[in-house]
Length: 160
View 1 (cartoon, rainbow, N blue to C red):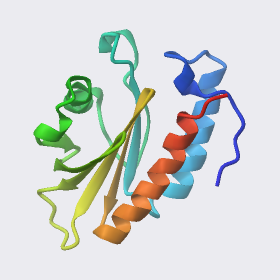
View 2: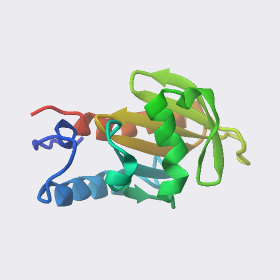
View 3: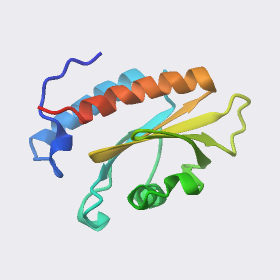
View 4: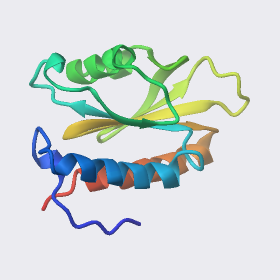
């Protein structure tokens, strides 16, 4: 969908000042076409497991969610300790439980959903980032959310 030929931000642990605006333009383009149609929300986090989180800004961008860095700490800690699938975690006011693990994707279902079809989240861990996406619905919605999430994760994990 996006034929972007640029340097991958995942190749470096930090972005240069010149790359940050480009990342935000890509995020804005992806979020505009994805959030609200296939996704209910998305957030992009810095993820540098070898550094203390106080050394960098945790939240890069978000759309459709209103998360604060303290809300994200359990997710980041679960990724670092490789125990995300063992416990419940919160995204906003939703309590989630991981149901499926696929390569670098964690698929979770919301356990306190009021919707009949339910809600879910996908957490993708790629070099330098954690991408969190949320969606409403069951199997069909989950497949669409996974496809849309894969578009951005594939771009971020590209090699030059």
